[in-house]
Image (cartoon, rainbow, N blue to C red; front, top):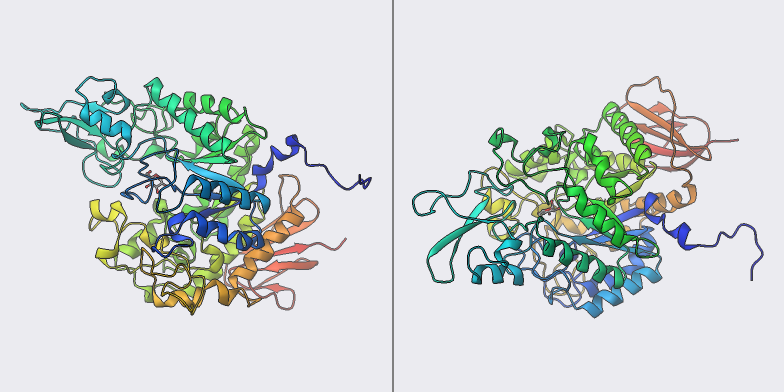
Length: 567
Ligand code: GLC
């Protein structure tokens, strides 16, 4: 037995806090690594990359859905919540993957999609085969249509992916019948969360994955579960703007009752040791986010504020201060994110002429995609320079940092994808208004010139979304050897983050320059971020890492540095 005083035993209690400052890496399984050459990434592919993930230095992975699915919405249309898509592997492959990740010290977070099932789910199939008013229909939201023969939808609500939010079914006897509600694609019928059976089934799913080694859950559209389907909307334009409502009175979004679901789930999470964690995807008004993040609820909620901000010191400062205060008040820890599978990659957003991601969901990026997604309109070098600066700033913040696969390679969004290759339902249902999210879901380039296959080492036989030729420049095996690469930068930043992490506090330092943010973390760890273009003089100390070369004690424009102050 060691008697060294500096060894802190990892007790269950200690470990229960692992999520508070975790760096979580999002894997979009179908586009990460393909082990069997069918063009789709799979669980064995993830297992084969565990050494890569370990070296990257992340604390946890969050896996987007890998469940059986017809992929009407990239897997967010789940056929069976307690199984693995046979194209992605088996439950045994999941166990093997989870064991390999755990052995590497990496936690596993799985995605739970409670708002809707897929239309191929056994429950929905049963609902279609059962009569109106049956218990099978009562798990979903079925209504009679309006008009003489019920030929009109029950109301004029539209779905998020465009088009009506209601779909008419054919009754078992072959006649046109009732309508069901779908907030997203028509292949994603919404569940009725007033039905106790729905509650019970999701608790079963939470236990199923917790028992199999999931350490936590990412909860998809967590703010939509409870609905008032009889309500009149003040205005159809408000239908999908949860952020406009601060009083829990919107018929579809962020209703107060939704938290009864999460207090139930919290009891399940706390049955485990360490308790299972959860993070809510809830696009709600910032003042109401804390409810999702409460320790009696999910514990954490995504804060998408930085993702939606411009590359601007004042905006960043305000967002950071507000979110840290909010987290401190509730006992949650803050979350930070710039990229995920739903938005244009931040290295591209920041390289667009407007240079930001404002107007919700990175609207500048959406506009660029709509205009044709021409890479020549993106200043990729500048985009990456700013993305690295923003990321280094984020990695220095108290709270947990969510990273999206490929950002560690500095990958740009693929703006140009032929119509026939597109997969995202937002493209098909919203033609001309949105292009969809396929461009950030293109499989990763692992090898610039692979001996086998044509998918840059993603697999041996193509990739389900085509990769552009310029992906070779970002390949992992090229960056792996280059100490100046984006990958080397992420590895170093993540390693240092572990070394430096302390209490969840931050002290702002005065800066005479409006474009500069300067704060200190415990232990004299200084962070200076320069959002302007002119170089700035740095405080004295050892430069630990910088997103661009520090020369003569000066930090260049659009760059961040970490400095250990000299005592
Ligand atoms: C969430 C997911 C998104 C999906 C939607 C419907 O917003 O992140 O990818 O399309 O929910 O499940």
